Image 1: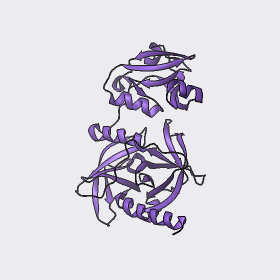
Image 2: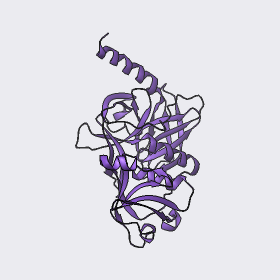
Image 3: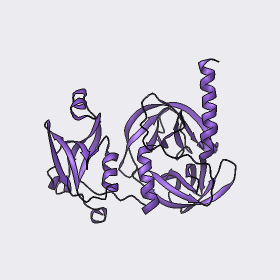
Image 4: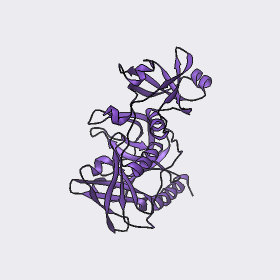
Amino acid sequence: MTMLEQLSQELETLAARTAPAVVRVEHRSGQGSGLVLAQDGYVLTNRHVVQGARRVQIVFHDGSDSTGRLVGADARTDLAVLRVDGSGLTSLPLAERLRVKVGQLVLAIGNPLRFERSVSLGVVSALDRSLPTPDGHLFEGMIQTDAAINPGNSGGPLVTMDGAVAGINTAIIPYAQGIGFAVPAHTANWVVGVLMQKGRVLRPILGINALGVELASEAVQQYGQPRAVRVFQVSPNSPADDARLREGDLILAANGSPLASIDDLQRVMVLSGERKLDLDVVRKDKRQHIVVTPLPPAEAA
């Protein structure tokens, strides 16, 4: 058997194993894809797929359908969780600790233009991409792939060769070819948990503009991590300003958890349950701890 024949067989097996967990999500205003996360009826999709609908139709791989109820949605990650009646559904959980690599083979599975459970092969083109959203925010930490993603793929999984869900296909650039984006599984994982419990994600406010950055090799050896969060702007009279966080500061960790992206920082703030945030910061090559008291979302609104 040639290497190409072996790869073809592995792709056939992978598609047969993973595609049944992908569903079609429909309502009067549009349609997209979804992923069954749990056998008892939780489905993950994109927020923009279900926006404006409280109930949607979920069509499973065997042609059966069910009504899906919106559990919660998060605009900052464009994710939404639905609940459908059922048990023993074919499911595919998110990979909790998977970190994909550039060049890694992936499959995008979904229902582009209503062509059900279409499979396209590609590679991870880049990591930690940022995209502007229509409401002026940024989708941050996105996986870029050249696997074909078209309207209707939104909400479907991006799957690695070993069958792990690396991300949720979310966005395309309409005028480009071979450029699609997915929300990483490690982001979707914690957002889904919060949506299931609370229906929305309330993010405390620090008052900074920042971005995850790659560290130089010398800094990697010195600090023991490949990435950190760089502060580009501090809002006047914000919690960050009050704590004397400054433009140019490099945030290595929050409450002892290393940071590689803004998503990591938001996860710590949302999940830690701590009112205060202990930041491990590098300023002008000197390491220091800065304690910030973020503004609760209710107060910030």
